[in-house]
Length: 413
Image (cartoon, rainbow, N blue to C red; front, side):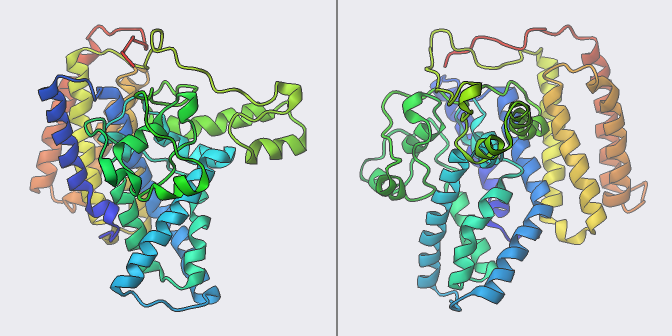
């Protein structure tokens, strides 16, 4: 089982999301939309499953540096862990800040900012490739002498802290905000308003932003998202979109400008291609969130399949140590395939109806091999057959359901 606090805290994450949904109902406010929330969590699932492979290399490099380059050997005591917590958060500030200030790194982090809503599900929306760009910022901790196991635990706690600050249900918090990152501070960070761009990069301690000139108090409530909307519920595409746009923009550049474009701030362009792009103002009167209105039967099918995917993902992550490398690749591929489908059904992609039956049959086959151990009478396999039959009947019904063609609907900012 994965020892990371991020994985262990998954049940708590979903409990708190449920509580926030209850608050939404009681207060009669709009915090969640089906497509956006499912995509947020899908990105988190995609990141966690791919990290099973990427994290091995990242932690190997950290451990190699610790074994060969450390200047001290710091034993894990209560006070050394407090020091490491503060140090890890300091490293997080700089890795996060550079993820906003270097175009290539932004490609790994932009996924987290794409949601046009702001709720606890946004905390789970993480970029698949982000770990590759942020890992080097933590190498100084290995050089200092913090071992890889202690580092994984403490850096995980820094990440877990940041979950609760992704909410609009908590306002200002008085003296607490002078030292710690809070929902108010982090709402600023997610705002696409020009004065909020690239502010409040802190993880736990907001003092880093105040020390290094990137702090901004929340004034008017932000408009969320990125300056060029993603307009997709596909968790794979949202991870690739920025890199594709980078490649397209580089086509007309000289070699030296390609390097500058890669490592300068997002929006930088050479003078012969127009120069630095400005940050557009947000007109709340005309602002339209990406949305895909769908009949209830389609939304419910997406949610139903999503719950199944969540159960499979949880079982996989909590038992991944029991799988071989090939089995991990197969299961990760199926999980990502599943969450992609729960998004693109809301976009009414024609190829969904071709591939969805194949995905359902693949799920039955994988259940037979991995869950039932080739036993046709296994309770898990029988349950999978029932889910598959329900899915096929449901799929037939929704294929006959009229659907709103427009992919945009006006939603209050």
